[in-house]
Image 1: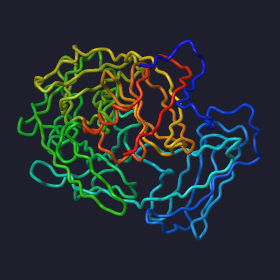
Image 2: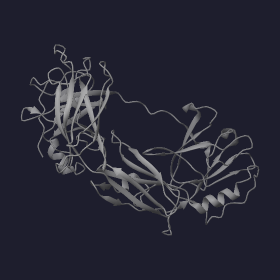
Image 3: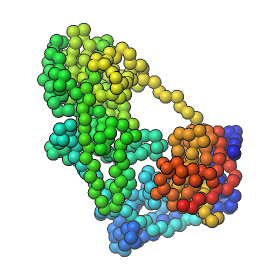
Length: 463
């Protein structure tokens, strides 16, 4: 185990013993007047892509000029970008029939092009993958199409702990949705909608906000749909990933199943003059409470199926499925003016909100930064998959090496890890324990406690 010295102040870890220029910089290198990225844009089979639009953005502010530069490839696919300063440059390209993508992109990672005083120019072959699409139909429990459902296209976030929303849309009157122009990769599809029959019954029941003795909603209609992932899962862990290959269209129909609606009772003292969606006033002086559902791809606006003012002035809000929610008073945007509550799977029909807990920020864990260089056969290894695997278990951090073999793990929780580099490792199934273990046995144990310089050699492993 290699211990990291927390007293050092230099935030660069050199995982090499050879004299290879690194992105940490060389104070004695003479700065050239221009920096250039040039090359050719092709399809994966090598055919040139004419008139592709290219842009480059520096990872850091550029003192020599604009840190974003753009150009267009010629009819044979050749291009040249003149850049105002050294640094790590991210190269993007898009063309007709091809989605916008980064150089050597894998999921949310890509290979940065490193330019510095000793390497002011770099040539690339930018192999673009053609776009694909996902389309499908959202069906209810009777296999009828669901219109106006919110559809979210998701991918893993860079942290890997959550999903991020790539795109969103709504279904048409046939229940059909479509996402086109997609880069190759794995996606998840999630649906948020309320049953039309519950919404219709709830609207007619609560249309007069002054009525406190409205009749109870028919139990046969008092249902709700939980957030549903393709094809019919109510949690992301059970969802299927839709693999989009270049030039293909994948079908992803989502089937919804209703669950009994849980009603949350919001005390009169806590609801204020704050707002519900759908444009229906719930109190004479304003609109109803602001409620969000907490999902693993972000907070979502909650749409109730029914709202009724009870005799004591509290609100009976219907349409909750099991899950986590937040309630905002609405008179202030301050987070301290929110409450969080959970609707359990065994929740009663009526859930008084007096048990809600104030929303608190999670305790921040100490983090550090790991920089280094990965080599293969004593040469910089470009595009390698880097893994930081916690010895105690937990989330595996991923990164990708740049053209000079450099890489950066930013905001890594302090702790003990095994560092692994795999050449051409992006297609490996590392969820398979045996596959991952084979590489971990040859990895580098490190103890990250703070910023320092770690002088040791990391060689990329071959597949």
